[in-house]
Length: 195
Ligand code: HEC
Image (cartoon, rainbow, N blue to C red; front, side):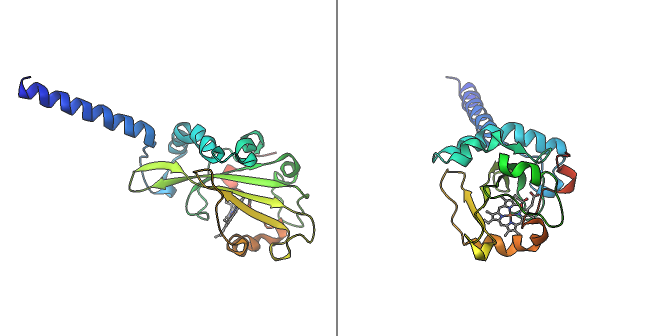
């Protein structure tokens, strides 16, 4: 083959491979989460949304498989700063939804069995891409079941489907700040679903 043609062939293979990698990677226009526009967030979610559930569900976890059928509490993912500057969107199960969606600020008592699952998207600066972050879960236990955490059980699932490991106090030390809201922080006001 003519050396120039050969070079062109090699280059085009490289280009195709590169495009395929990009399609897989969900490229972002900025790696600064706070600078993402609503349109950026929408296109990130278009790219990664289905992949998130597949990722969380790999270990067969029932919350991972079902949470997208719960009540969505935000109009889109928000960047609150907490939870590692990730893009966050929370779902509430049937027991939690009615009370949670009031976003009440005082005297909140969530019913036993309430569950909130918050999916997250990480902006990976090296890859210049959005990647799946952990699924964070809170479950309200019966009164007296977990005194140190005011009867909340914190759990999580990694993007490989395995449980996230941490001490309960790691989560509760921060959530403790929202005592009047039964330790729930709620989504950013601008993304709350109005009821
Ligand atoms: C540094 C503070 C901080 C820490 C630590 C923290 N959270 Fe949160 N959490 C927040 C804030 C702020 C929100 C609301 C953010 C949003 O959705 O925009 C939130 C929301 C949540 C929600 C949705 C329910 C709600 O509060 O409205 C879940 C579920 C959750 N966190 C689980 C966890 C778990 C599990 C851990 C530990 C692995 C954890 N959190 C650690 C601050 C924290």
